[in-house]
Length: 441
Image (cartoon, rainbow, N blue to C red):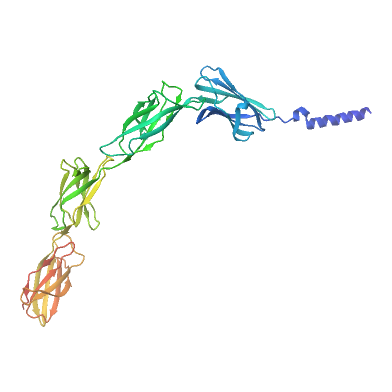
Protein backbone atom coordinates (compact mmCIF):
# COMPACT_ATOMS: atom_id res chain seq x y z
CA UNK A 1 0.00 0.00 0.00
CA UNK A 2 2.78 2.34 0.89
CA UNK A 3 4.63 1.55 -2.33
CA UNK A 4 1.53 2.21 -4.44
CA UNK A 5 1.05 5.63 -2.80
CA UNK A 6 4.71 6.43 -3.33
CA UNK A 7 4.45 5.50 -7.00
CA UNK A 8 1.43 7.69 -7.52
CA UNK A 9 3.26 10.51 -5.74
CA UNK A 10 6.27 10.13 -8.06
CA UNK A 11 4.02 10.19 -11.14
CA UNK A 12 2.33 13.31 -9.85
CA UNK A 13 5.69 15.01 -9.30
CA UNK A 14 6.79 14.28 -12.89
CA UNK A 15 3.50 15.56 -14.26
CA UNK A 16 3.84 18.72 -12.22
CA UNK A 17 7.36 19.31 -13.53
CA UNK A 18 6.23 18.85 -17.11
CA UNK A 19 3.13 20.97 -16.93
CA UNK A 20 4.18 23.74 -14.49
CA UNK A 21 2.15 25.30 -11.78
CA UNK A 22 -1.18 26.94 -12.57
CA UNK A 23 0.30 30.38 -11.81
CA UNK A 24 3.24 29.82 -14.16
CA UNK A 25 0.92 28.88 -17.03
CA UNK A 26 -1.33 32.00 -16.83
CA UNK A 27 -1.07 34.23 -19.96
CA UNK A 28 -0.17 37.79 -19.05
CA UNK A 29 -2.06 40.54 -20.97
CA UNK A 30 -0.22 43.15 -23.08
CA UNK A 31 -0.26 46.62 -21.55
CA UNK A 32 -1.67 49.41 -23.74
CA UNK A 33 0.87 51.32 -25.85
CA UNK A 34 0.40 55.10 -25.71
CA UNK A 35 2.04 56.02 -28.96
CA UNK A 36 1.66 59.80 -28.82
CA UNK A 37 -0.40 62.74 -27.61
CA UNK A 38 -0.63 66.21 -29.07
CA UNK A 39 -2.81 69.11 -30.20
CA UNK A 40 -4.83 68.69 -33.37
CA UNK A 41 -2.94 70.80 -35.90
CA UNK A 42 -5.89 72.92 -37.03
CA UNK A 43 -7.69 72.88 -33.69
CA UNK A 44 -5.02 73.50 -31.04
CA UNK A 45 -7.31 73.21 -28.00
CA UNK A 46 -8.33 69.68 -28.93
CA UNK A 47 -6.17 66.90 -27.51
CA UNK A 48 -5.49 63.82 -29.68
CA UNK A 49 -4.07 60.57 -28.26
CA UNK A 50 -2.96 57.50 -30.19
CA UNK A 51 -3.23 54.19 -28.28
CA UNK A 52 -3.01 50.50 -29.24
CA UNK A 53 -3.51 47.35 -27.16
CA UNK A 54 -4.44 43.68 -27.45
CA UNK A 55 -7.98 44.48 -26.34
CA UNK A 56 -10.30 47.45 -26.47
CA UNK A 57 -9.31 50.57 -24.58
CA UNK A 58 -11.84 51.12 -21.79
CA UNK A 59 -10.36 54.03 -19.90
CA UNK A 60 -8.17 57.05 -20.70
CA UNK A 61 -7.00 59.67 -18.30
CA UNK A 62 -4.85 62.56 -19.51
CA UNK A 63 -3.09 64.82 -17.04
CA UNK A 64 -2.17 68.27 -18.37
CA UNK A 65 1.02 69.64 -16.77
CA UNK A 66 2.36 73.16 -17.29
CA UNK A 67 5.75 73.05 -19.03
CA UNK A 68 6.67 76.28 -17.28
CA UNK A 69 5.70 75.40 -13.66
CA UNK A 70 5.49 71.58 -13.82
CA UNK A 71 2.14 71.89 -12.03
CA UNK A 72 -0.84 69.79 -13.02
CA UNK A 73 -3.57 72.13 -14.30
CA UNK A 74 -6.24 69.72 -15.57
CA UNK A 75 -7.25 66.08 -15.72
CA UNK A 76 -9.17 64.81 -18.76
CA UNK A 77 -11.31 61.77 -18.03
CA UNK A 78 -12.56 59.02 -20.38
CA UNK A 79 -15.98 60.56 -20.85
CA UNK A 80 -14.33 63.60 -22.44
CA UNK A 81 -12.82 61.46 -25.23
CA UNK A 82 -14.34 59.96 -28.37
CA UNK A 83 -12.81 57.56 -30.86
CA UNK A 84 -11.80 59.70 -33.85
CA UNK A 85 -10.31 57.06 -36.16
CA UNK A 86 -9.25 53.42 -36.12
CA UNK A 87 -10.63 50.89 -33.65
CA UNK A 88 -10.85 50.70 -29.83
CA UNK A 89 -7.88 48.31 -29.99
CA UNK A 90 -5.79 50.57 -32.21
CA UNK A 91 -7.11 54.06 -32.70
CA UNK A 92 -6.87 57.79 -32.29
CA UNK A 93 -8.95 59.50 -29.61
CA UNK A 94 -9.93 63.18 -29.61
CA UNK A 95 -11.43 65.23 -26.83
CA UNK A 96 -15.03 65.97 -27.72
CA UNK A 97 -14.55 69.64 -26.96
CA UNK A 98 -11.42 71.83 -26.81
CA UNK A 99 -9.81 72.00 -23.38
CA UNK A 100 -10.56 75.10 -21.34
CA UNK A 101 -7.32 76.06 -19.61
CA UNK A 102 -6.62 79.21 -17.68
CA UNK A 103 -3.41 80.14 -19.51
CA UNK A 104 -1.96 79.89 -22.98
CA UNK A 105 1.32 78.06 -23.40
CA UNK A 106 2.93 74.63 -23.73
CA UNK A 107 1.77 71.69 -21.66
CA UNK A 108 3.16 68.20 -21.10
CA UNK A 109 0.57 65.43 -21.47
CA UNK A 110 0.72 62.38 -19.17
CA UNK A 111 -1.58 59.56 -20.22
CA UNK A 112 -2.97 56.58 -18.27
CA UNK A 113 -4.69 53.95 -20.42
CA UNK A 114 -6.56 50.76 -19.42
CA UNK A 115 -7.82 48.01 -21.72
CA UNK A 116 -10.64 45.45 -21.45
CA UNK A 117 -8.27 42.85 -19.95
CA UNK A 118 -7.59 45.19 -17.05
CA UNK A 119 -4.05 45.94 -18.24
CA UNK A 120 -2.95 49.48 -17.53
CA UNK A 121 -0.03 51.68 -18.60
CA UNK A 122 1.12 55.17 -17.68
CA UNK A 123 3.21 57.39 -19.97
CA UNK A 124 4.42 60.53 -18.22
CA UNK A 125 5.80 62.04 -21.42
CA UNK A 126 3.25 60.98 -24.02
CA UNK A 127 3.42 64.29 -25.85
CA UNK A 128 2.54 67.95 -25.57
CA UNK A 129 -0.40 70.26 -25.94
CA UNK A 130 0.31 73.47 -27.91
CA UNK A 131 -2.28 75.64 -26.25
CA UNK A 132 -1.72 78.70 -28.42
CA UNK A 133 -3.62 81.16 -30.54
CA UNK A 134 -3.45 80.25 -34.25
CA UNK A 135 -2.94 83.20 -36.61
CA UNK A 136 -5.59 83.27 -39.35
CA UNK A 137 -5.65 85.62 -42.34
CA UNK A 138 -8.90 86.75 -43.91
CA UNK A 139 -9.66 88.61 -47.13
CA UNK A 140 -6.04 89.17 -48.16
CA UNK A 141 -5.99 90.88 -51.56
CA UNK A 142 -3.75 92.91 -53.84
CA UNK A 143 -4.74 96.03 -55.75
CA UNK A 144 -3.45 94.58 -59.02
CA UNK A 145 -2.68 91.22 -60.57
CA UNK A 146 -0.18 92.56 -63.08
CA UNK A 147 2.66 95.09 -63.01
CA UNK A 148 4.60 96.88 -65.73
CA UNK A 149 7.84 98.80 -66.07
CA UNK A 150 6.30 102.05 -64.84
CA UNK A 151 4.05 100.56 -62.14
CA UNK A 152 5.92 98.08 -59.94
CA UNK A 153 4.18 98.84 -56.62
CA UNK A 154 1.56 96.42 -55.28
CA UNK A 155 -0.66 97.24 -52.30
CA UNK A 156 -1.64 94.36 -50.02
CA UNK A 157 -4.68 94.58 -47.71
CA UNK A 158 -6.21 92.07 -45.35
CA UNK A 159 -7.22 91.15 -41.80
CA UNK A 160 -5.30 89.15 -39.19
CA UNK A 161 -7.28 87.22 -36.60
CA UNK A 162 -6.47 84.66 -33.96
CA UNK A 163 -8.32 81.41 -33.26
CA UNK A 164 -8.49 80.89 -29.48
CA UNK A 165 -7.89 77.27 -28.47
CA UNK A 166 -10.63 77.04 -25.79
CA UNK A 167 -13.52 78.31 -27.92
CA UNK A 168 -12.25 78.24 -31.52
CA UNK A 169 -13.45 81.85 -31.64
CA UNK A 170 -11.80 84.14 -34.18
CA UNK A 171 -10.83 87.53 -32.76
CA UNK A 172 -8.93 90.40 -34.41
CA UNK A 173 -5.26 90.54 -33.45
CA UNK A 174 -4.53 94.17 -32.65
CA UNK A 175 -1.10 95.78 -33.11
CA UNK A 176 0.52 92.61 -34.43
CA UNK A 177 3.29 92.63 -37.05
CA UNK A 178 2.48 91.27 -40.51
CA UNK A 179 5.23 90.54 -43.02
CA UNK A 180 4.46 91.20 -46.67
CA UNK A 181 6.53 88.68 -48.60
CA UNK A 182 7.54 88.92 -52.25
CA UNK A 183 8.74 85.65 -53.72
CA UNK A 184 8.95 84.27 -50.15
CA UNK A 185 11.24 87.07 -48.93
CA UNK A 186 9.98 89.76 -46.58
CA UNK A 187 9.73 93.03 -48.49
CA UNK A 188 7.83 95.06 -45.90
CA UNK A 189 6.39 94.73 -42.38
CA UNK A 190 3.19 96.49 -41.29
CA UNK A 191 1.08 96.38 -38.11
CA UNK A 192 -2.59 95.64 -37.64
CA UNK A 193 -5.09 98.21 -36.36
CA UNK A 194 -7.70 97.74 -33.64
CA UNK A 195 -9.80 95.57 -35.98
CA UNK A 196 -6.88 93.44 -37.11
CA UNK A 197 -6.77 95.16 -40.51
CA UNK A 198 -3.49 95.88 -42.24
CA UNK A 199 -2.32 97.53 -45.45
CA UNK A 200 1.09 97.91 -47.04
CA UNK A 201 2.92 98.35 -50.32
CA UNK A 202 5.66 96.21 -51.78
CA UNK A 203 7.89 96.63 -54.82
CA UNK A 204 7.71 93.70 -57.20
CA UNK A 205 10.50 92.98 -59.68
CA UNK A 206 9.09 90.11 -61.69
CA UNK A 207 6.38 87.49 -62.05
CA UNK A 208 6.37 86.28 -58.43
CA UNK A 209 3.96 85.36 -55.59
CA UNK A 210 2.98 87.92 -52.95
CA UNK A 211 1.83 86.74 -49.52
CA UNK A 212 0.99 88.00 -46.02
CA UNK A 213 2.76 86.12 -43.21
CA UNK A 214 2.60 86.27 -39.43
CA UNK A 215 5.83 85.11 -37.83
CA UNK A 216 6.65 84.68 -34.15
CA UNK A 217 6.97 87.95 -32.26
CA UNK A 218 8.47 88.14 -28.78
CA UNK A 219 5.82 90.67 -27.79
CA UNK A 220 3.09 88.11 -28.55
CA UNK A 221 4.65 84.79 -27.49
CA UNK A 222 1.44 82.76 -27.61
CA UNK A 223 0.42 83.50 -31.20
CA UNK A 224 1.63 80.91 -33.70
CA UNK A 225 2.76 81.28 -37.30
CA UNK A 226 0.15 81.85 -40.00
CA UNK A 227 0.16 82.71 -43.67
CA UNK A 228 -2.33 83.78 -46.31
CA UNK A 229 -2.74 82.10 -49.69
CA UNK A 230 -0.22 83.54 -52.13
CA UNK A 231 -1.27 85.79 -55.00
CA UNK A 232 0.66 85.38 -58.24
CA UNK A 233 1.60 88.73 -59.74
CA UNK A 234 2.12 88.78 -63.50
CA UNK A 235 4.32 91.04 -65.61
CA UNK A 236 3.17 93.02 -68.60
CA UNK A 237 6.27 93.58 -70.69
CA UNK A 238 7.07 96.71 -72.60
CA UNK A 239 6.81 95.97 -76.31
CA UNK A 240 9.95 96.84 -78.28
CA UNK A 241 10.79 96.78 -81.97
CA UNK A 242 13.61 97.48 -84.38
CA UNK A 243 13.35 99.84 -87.30
CA UNK A 244 16.09 98.85 -89.78
CA UNK A 245 17.06 101.91 -91.81
CA UNK A 246 19.88 100.45 -93.90
CA UNK A 247 20.19 98.21 -95.75
CA UNK A 248 16.42 98.43 -96.08
CA UNK A 249 16.26 96.97 -99.63
CA UNK A 250 17.92 93.99 -101.22
CA UNK A 251 21.24 94.85 -102.81
CA UNK A 252 24.15 93.19 -104.54
CA UNK A 253 27.80 93.86 -103.73
CA UNK A 254 31.19 92.52 -104.69
CA UNK A 255 33.17 90.38 -102.29
CA UNK A 256 35.16 92.62 -99.96
CA UNK A 257 32.77 95.53 -100.22
CA UNK A 258 31.55 96.91 -96.87
CA UNK A 259 27.93 97.32 -95.88
CA UNK A 260 26.70 99.49 -93.00
CA UNK A 261 23.77 98.43 -90.84
CA UNK A 262 21.79 101.26 -89.26
CA UNK A 263 18.80 100.56 -87.01
CA UNK A 264 16.78 102.16 -84.20
CA UNK A 265 15.30 100.39 -81.19
CA UNK A 266 11.89 101.69 -80.12
CA UNK A 267 9.58 101.03 -77.18
CA UNK A 268 5.82 101.34 -77.03
CA UNK A 269 4.30 104.03 -74.82
CA UNK A 270 0.78 105.41 -74.42
CA UNK A 271 1.92 108.21 -76.70
CA UNK A 272 3.23 105.84 -79.38
CA UNK A 273 6.61 104.40 -80.32
CA UNK A 274 9.66 106.27 -79.05
CA UNK A 275 13.43 105.63 -79.19
CA UNK A 276 14.63 103.29 -76.44
CA UNK A 277 17.99 104.15 -74.94
CA UNK A 278 20.30 102.13 -72.73
CA UNK A 279 19.38 98.71 -74.15
CA UNK A 280 22.00 96.08 -74.91
CA UNK A 281 22.29 93.48 -77.62
CA UNK A 282 24.34 92.19 -80.49
CA UNK A 283 24.52 92.02 -84.28
CA UNK A 284 25.24 88.94 -86.40
CA UNK A 285 25.69 88.50 -90.11
CA UNK A 286 23.75 85.34 -91.03
CA UNK A 287 24.65 83.57 -94.30
CA UNK A 288 21.53 82.61 -96.23
CA UNK A 289 23.02 79.23 -97.05
CA UNK A 290 23.31 78.26 -93.40
CA UNK A 291 27.03 78.89 -93.02
CA UNK A 292 28.87 80.16 -89.98
CA UNK A 293 27.53 83.32 -88.34
CA UNK A 294 29.78 86.33 -88.03
CA UNK A 295 29.54 88.41 -84.89
CA UNK A 296 29.57 92.00 -86.01
CA UNK A 297 29.60 93.40 -82.47
CA UNK A 298 27.70 94.38 -79.36
CA UNK A 299 25.91 97.58 -78.50
CA UNK A 300 24.09 99.72 -75.97
CA UNK A 301 21.61 102.05 -77.58
CA UNK A 302 22.11 105.79 -77.12
CA UNK A 303 19.56 108.49 -76.42
CA UNK A 304 18.21 108.22 -79.96
CA UNK A 305 18.01 104.41 -79.73
CA UNK A 306 20.20 104.05 -82.83
CA UNK A 307 23.04 101.65 -83.61
CA UNK A 308 25.41 101.47 -86.59
CA UNK A 309 27.79 98.69 -87.64
CA UNK A 310 29.93 98.17 -90.75
CA UNK A 311 30.83 94.75 -92.06
CA UNK A 312 32.31 93.21 -95.23
CA UNK A 313 30.38 89.95 -95.69
CA UNK A 314 32.07 87.02 -97.43
CA UNK A 315 28.87 85.47 -98.72
CA UNK A 316 25.21 86.22 -99.32
CA UNK A 317 23.11 86.80 -96.19
CA UNK A 318 21.60 89.45 -93.96
CA UNK A 319 22.22 91.24 -90.69
CA UNK A 320 20.39 89.98 -87.59
CA UNK A 321 20.05 92.45 -84.73
CA UNK A 322 18.74 91.43 -81.29
CA UNK A 323 18.23 93.37 -78.09
CA UNK A 324 17.83 91.77 -74.68
CA UNK A 325 17.47 92.93 -71.10
CA UNK A 326 17.90 91.48 -67.65
CA UNK A 327 14.83 93.48 -66.72
CA UNK A 328 11.82 91.12 -66.97
CA UNK A 329 9.61 94.12 -67.76
CA UNK A 330 11.27 94.64 -71.15
CA UNK A 331 10.46 92.32 -74.03
CA UNK A 332 13.32 91.32 -76.35
CA UNK A 333 13.24 92.37 -80.00
CA UNK A 334 14.89 91.05 -83.14
CA UNK A 335 14.99 92.09 -86.78
CA UNK A 336 16.69 91.13 -90.03
CA UNK A 337 17.99 93.48 -92.63
CA UNK A 338 17.30 93.13 -96.33
CA UNK A 339 19.20 90.41 -98.19
CA UNK A 340 22.71 91.29 -99.28
CA UNK A 341 23.93 89.28 -102.25
CA UNK A 342 27.69 88.90 -102.37
CA UNK A 343 29.17 88.09 -105.79
CA UNK A 344 32.71 86.91 -106.49
CA UNK A 345 34.63 88.03 -109.56
CA UNK A 346 35.05 86.03 -112.75
CA UNK A 347 37.08 86.95 -115.87
CA UNK A 348 38.30 85.65 -119.22
CA UNK A 349 42.09 85.74 -119.51
CA UNK A 350 42.10 84.80 -123.19
CA UNK A 351 39.88 83.91 -126.10
CA UNK A 352 40.64 83.13 -129.76
CA UNK A 353 38.75 81.89 -132.86
CA UNK A 354 40.72 80.27 -135.70
CA UNK A 355 39.30 79.05 -139.00
CA UNK A 356 39.94 75.43 -139.87
CA UNK A 357 39.01 73.27 -142.81
CA UNK A 358 35.26 73.45 -142.77
CA UNK A 359 34.86 75.24 -139.43
CA UNK A 360 36.21 77.38 -136.62
CA UNK A 361 38.21 76.35 -133.56
CA UNK A 362 37.69 78.49 -130.42
CA UNK A 363 39.59 78.28 -127.16
CA UNK A 364 40.34 80.37 -124.11
CA UNK A 365 40.82 80.47 -120.33
CA UNK A 366 39.00 81.86 -117.30
CA UNK A 367 40.10 83.09 -113.90
CA UNK A 368 38.30 83.55 -110.54
CA UNK A 369 40.54 86.00 -108.68
CA UNK A 370 38.69 85.95 -105.33
CA UNK A 371 39.85 82.41 -104.61
CA UNK A 372 36.50 80.60 -105.00
CA UNK A 373 35.53 78.57 -108.04
CA UNK A 374 32.09 77.38 -109.20
CA UNK A 375 31.42 73.67 -108.99
CA UNK A 376 31.00 73.64 -112.78
CA UNK A 377 32.00 76.37 -115.22
CA UNK A 378 29.69 76.41 -118.27
CA UNK A 379 31.02 78.65 -121.06
CA UNK A 380 28.59 79.77 -123.75
CA UNK A 381 30.14 80.31 -127.19
CA UNK A 382 28.24 83.10 -128.98
CA UNK A 383 28.45 84.40 -132.54
CA UNK A 384 27.39 87.55 -134.37
CA UNK A 385 27.38 88.65 -137.99
CA UNK A 386 28.04 92.29 -137.15
CA UNK A 387 29.60 92.10 -133.67
CA UNK A 388 26.54 93.71 -132.11
CA UNK A 389 23.70 91.16 -131.93
CA UNK A 390 24.80 87.90 -130.29
CA UNK A 391 23.34 84.40 -130.38
CA UNK A 392 24.30 81.32 -128.36
CA UNK A 393 25.90 78.77 -130.57
CA UNK A 394 26.99 76.04 -128.14
CA UNK A 395 28.03 75.49 -124.53
CA UNK A 396 31.28 73.93 -123.36
CA UNK A 397 32.85 73.58 -119.94
CA UNK A 398 36.04 75.10 -118.58
CA UNK A 399 38.24 72.75 -116.55
CA UNK A 400 41.50 73.08 -114.68
CA UNK A 401 44.48 72.91 -117.01
CA UNK A 402 47.27 73.31 -114.47
CA UNK A 403 47.56 77.05 -114.95
CA UNK A 404 43.94 78.13 -115.32
CA UNK A 405 40.47 77.06 -116.32
CA UNK A 406 40.66 76.30 -120.03
CA UNK A 407 37.99 75.51 -122.59
CA UNK A 408 37.91 74.74 -126.31
CA UNK A 409 35.36 73.84 -128.99
CA UNK A 410 35.17 73.18 -132.75
CA UNK A 411 32.38 74.82 -134.70
CA UNK A 412 31.60 73.31 -138.13
CA UNK A 413 30.42 75.51 -141.00
CA UNK A 414 30.95 78.66 -138.94
CA UNK A 415 31.95 80.99 -141.75
CA UNK A 416 33.49 84.40 -141.31
CA UNK A 417 31.71 85.62 -138.20
CA UNK A 418 32.45 87.26 -134.88
CA UNK A 419 32.82 85.00 -131.83
CA UNK A 420 33.03 85.49 -128.07
CA UNK A 421 32.73 83.49 -124.81
CA UNK A 422 30.24 84.28 -122.08
CA UNK A 423 29.90 83.06 -118.45
CA UNK A 424 26.45 83.70 -116.96
CA UNK A 425 26.07 85.10 -113.43
CA UNK A 426 25.19 82.68 -110.60
CA UNK A 427 24.07 83.26 -107.04
CA UNK A 428 27.71 83.60 -106.04
CA UNK A 429 29.62 84.78 -109.13
CA UNK A 430 29.38 87.73 -111.44
CA UNK A 431 28.98 87.27 -115.21
CA UNK A 432 31.95 87.62 -117.54
CA UNK A 433 32.30 88.07 -121.30
CA UNK A 434 35.43 87.74 -123.38
CA UNK A 435 36.49 90.12 -126.12
CA UNK A 436 34.81 89.56 -129.47
CA UNK A 437 37.08 88.23 -132.20
CA UNK A 438 36.56 87.53 -135.89
CA UNK A 439 37.55 84.09 -137.01
CA UNK A 440 40.88 84.24 -138.86
CA UNK A 441 43.18 81.80 -140.56
